[in-house]
Structure formats: C-alpha cells, structure tokens
Image (cartoon, rainbow, N blue to C red; front, side):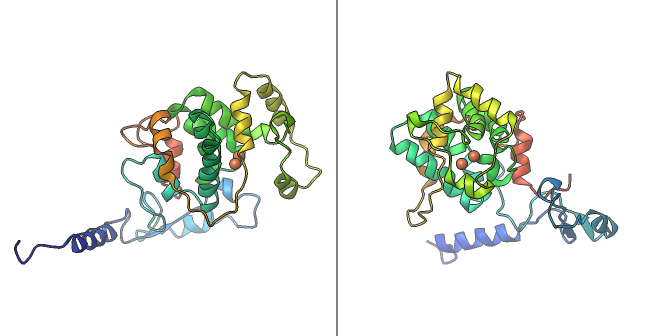
Length: 260
Ligand SMILES: [Fe+2]
Ligand SMILES: [Fe+2]
C-alpha cells in the first residue's frame, strides 16, 4: 500500500466535507421563505408576503430548491427517506409503532402497510382532512384497499365499534372538547365505510391508531423493509419524479419551502 492511501475513515470524512460544501441553489443570495397559506391563515402570524416582495433584489430571492435547514433528500427518494428525513418525530414514532403493533398481532401485510401510512399527510404535508390527502399521496403505489383504508380511518376514528373493542378516543375529548360533534360529511363517510367489504381494514387502522409515548423502545424502520418491498411500488425514478398523479405531493414534501 502506498503512503498516500487514505484510510476508510479519512475517505468518509472527505466525502462528508464534499457533501457539506455542495452548493445549494440560489447560492450567495438571501433566500426568503414564504410559509404556505394553509399553515398560516387564521393564526397570529402576520402575512410576510408584501414585505418579502418589497425586499426582492439581486441578492435576495424567494427560496426554490433544497433548503439547507432541512436534511438533503437523495435524488431518488424512497418511502423510508421521507420517514427518516422529513417526518416530525411524533409522526415517525406514531406510524412505526402503529404498524409494529399490527404486525406483532399477526395482521395481514396490507393492514400493516395501511397502519404504516395512515398519517403520512401529517408527517410533513397537511393536517386538515389528512386521511383523504394521505390516501391520494399513496394511491399510485399501493393496493386500492390500502388507500381506501387510509382515507376511511379519518371518519371511522369518530365512531366506536364495540365488536372489535374500539371506543371513541379519549384523546379526541382532549383535542376537541367532550361536546365535539363531527360534521355531516364525516358521519356519512363512516356509515358508508361500515357497509363496505373492506371495512375491517380501515377499522383495524383505527384500532392501532394509538399514540404510544413509550420513547424508551427504539424503533427500527428497517423492520418494514419486506412489507414495503412486497406492497409498496417504489418507483425507479424516486418518489416525486415518476410522473404519477401524486408525484407533486411528494415533491412538495421534498421542497416544502418552495415559493411556487
Ligand atoms: Fe389519522
Ligand atoms: Fe394516527
């Protein structure tokens, strides 16, 4: 071996430094972030748009592309990349634990996958009507029944089913107040779901839809590699770049701070 051979450790450090030095888009300019209206309107946060537009200059632009404040996504992102690099900690733990419990109880893999995906929209896209958004995000990549269950868990969460030991969530009393009544469209959807042949798949999602605050047990996303491999059609081009009907939703999660 010659004297100038680099050790694996040195090579790793050099690689990391190269990564850190890699240019972000709009280099050398101030990059302003305008929060999406959906996360701001109705809150106390004033609309920064007029001020930002007024301060545009050759050295101050609106952000487009990778934001250095977020972990950089790989060029061809996989489902697990979104779990690891984009989802908030609560969603990350919630989805993995729900799916783990469903798996440990011996449910079929489609149900395990539905549990793993059911709150994907809460991970880093939108919260309102999250079951509907989530179903659309995953629909091109999963069995129709999985997307169906993801959508219907939203409505079924509000209605008990004693036959499987599912009660109205105590957390909803805390979230919304004990006198909260779900709107008509939710009641209608729950009724329709109950009469559907796939009812139990969505019902099982609600049964495992529990927030486990046991932070001591480490969660291993790799435990689901096989289930994902068998039931989630990971596109070769990467999620966001395969031209599917929901590719734009995945791209929005990759670049949530894009101005347009
Ligand atoms: Fe949910
Ligand atoms: Fe959930």
